[in-house]
Length: 424
View 1 (cartoon, rainbow, N blue to C red):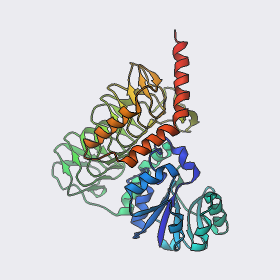
View 2: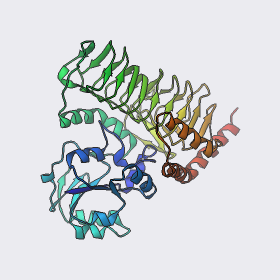
View 3: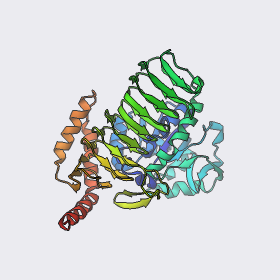
């Protein structure tokens, strides 16, 4: 059966890391929900319902998908999945019928629709009509969790890595005599297309380690499981702690703990990154460091879109949006939120915890006087260095987000100006 994955209104609560991608493309474990669905339900055609401003860019990235095409959704019976669903176990085709619907704490996770039901969704109140259909079905426990905030992805990452390792059924121990494995070699997967230098340690005593193709691991790197290193990534004498996912084509050095680096993240140098989510095309300058624990061990609050949200947990790092860049020796406070295309220049003290999209920070103060055109040119140059290009559609998405975040940016700049005026 064909399937669609959709975003519900709560997807916006995953900002800033969801500003440039649908919720189901965010990583937790080895991959995001969309890739899991493609493995579980191989189909020639699939579709996605995303926030309107993401549609053009997402369709460009996935030309095989029907994006925001409700007519295609109603062409034949379809499985529909909530993009915030983080499954605990593989869902089999027989688990979903036209008589049931999967729920987690009252939130719809999945449902199968007949064409005549799907046609009802072509009205403006998509979510309400969908929930109305779901309430006519027998409610079953979908298992897993619904991702509600950015830190949920980080908190569930280690356990999800273990599930993914079992789900994919991979086991291929080190092929190199010079790779030191602490723990069971059964919990190691190294692609035959990976390059591992001498004096690398893989520690599987707390979970599995998987290293994908075209990965290069430099000498004196230590990797603790559960951990996944995705294809094309390079590790430079890195200390990668348990619960970490390093996405595709990253460059990583220093210490990383319980964090997710989405893809194309540059963290070549020393510096600590802990309990954080870092989006693509972020460059972290040398000694850039995140705090992830308060000195009084109290729960951490994070300023999402300027509103302080209590995470209910004591270890929370930073959430960094696409194309953000930090200069040498940048120091992020516990529970920081940094938007898209921010430019961070340190000033010898902890940085502001709330840095909206397209803001720059100089000597600890937030401002918004860095020209957008210069930011876009910098992004274009950075992507060209990796043989990628900033397409006109992707550029327009950046401009759209710039407009969407203007109020948040203005508010943060006003607060910073007031503080500066009253500074002794």
